[in-house]
Amino acid sequence: MKWFVFVVACFAMLAASAPLSAHHGNAAYDATKEVTVNGVVTEWIVANPHSLLKFDTTDDKGNVVHWIVESGAASVNQARGVRLTKGLLKPGDKVTVTMMVAKNGQPVGRIHRLVLPDGRLMVNDLP
Amino acid sequence: MQNFVLKFLAKALILVPVLILSSLAHAQKAAQSSETKEHKGLPPICQGEANRFNCASAPIEGQKDEPAVDAWGRTVAPPAKGVKSAPAPRHDISGIWQVDGVDEFGFRGILGIFGAPAMPSDGYPEHEPPYTKEGLEAYHRHKPVFGMAAVPAAQANDPVKMCDPNGFPRNDLHSLSTFQILQTPVQVVILYARYKDWRMIWADGRELPKDPDPTWDGYSTGKWVDDTTFVVQTNGTDERTWLDNAGRPHSDALRVEERFHRVDREHMELTVTLDDPKMYMKPWIALDKQPFRLQSADFSMSETRCSPSEMATYDSLVSTPIVK
Image (cartoon, rainbow over all chains, first blue to last red; front, side, top):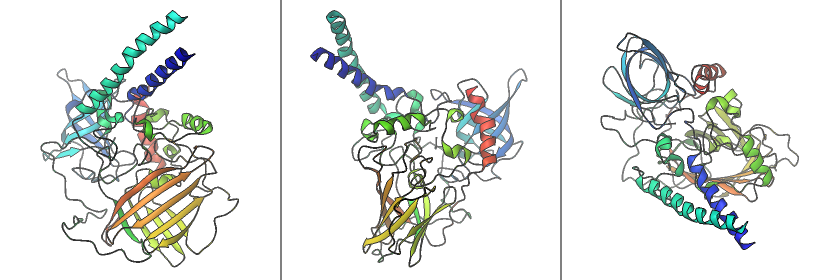
């Protein structure tokens, strides 16, 4: 019986360690790497729960990828760095976006940093 | 049988210290330091490669914060350094209040992203509320977007996903950033910037209802227990709402105590204690002397609405495509 109790205690300890690998708020994104791309803005939507940026990238062969990436909420306009105003970005703007991307390979991501056309750096901290 | 037990035990004895050591090593590797009373370094939910973006990032070279502005774009003067605040006025907690300081995840000016700020769902076992069997079952039915039980947004069943009200006490415990308190001789009214919610606290001496019909925000009464501390009791909250952003449940038996203590003119502390014997074995503290700083009287809070059409756009463009 003592053995049994000890084994159960070991299981309990193992179980207690398990949450370290649990999912989190970024669950559908691959958080193990950041991807940086240069693109041209097609639409900037200031909204809740997250503002959305649409932009296009073109590879060496001329293939265009339409990206949709999320940023901070409209209300979180001064968490860090640049305010997310409606006039911040417009179609045709060239931007450099550093983000994590969807695990399933869709061209969808969450912005970590974005270099604006005027060189300023927008940092998106909130998950 | 005994052989099997011995073999398993030997394996477990090796594995358990390895797991403990590896989690300690992760804690030490964490580049940022955010320290709380009990813990040093980042909480488990921010440790490891797959979780590193859950917490605020360290300052980045080349990034310069723009001066803080309010919703009208008017510059907000930073608090004067070295100037002692005037004493707290008597029986007065009115004003516009903003979260003061940085939380354990490195976030400034916002609270409760990973659940009740004093008990976030962050991987520390002592931050798990003392669930009853029924409470744990209810928690497991909830699929939040944040915390240790988080799922991708498209698979979540958080009621605010469809713009159901935050309700009370989630208003106090989820993404609390800025709120305004208005006082009349018989009422204290709280205007929450998030979702533009407001709550009425009766301070006319009435008792809480004995058999309340549940409402999103419940029924609140408050009284001054000394010159600078206003204590609010709430019952009759709707059990469809979650307590916090991590999906902690409550029942219709929930009783909430809020203790607003104005430390001096510029500073207030809020403590929130939850007592729900159906869901939790004992009362627990969800906000613990959380500091807030008074904003200037002309500070304009920013607008945060829950717009069903904006939610639908987000779902169709982002949440749904990334889980297909």
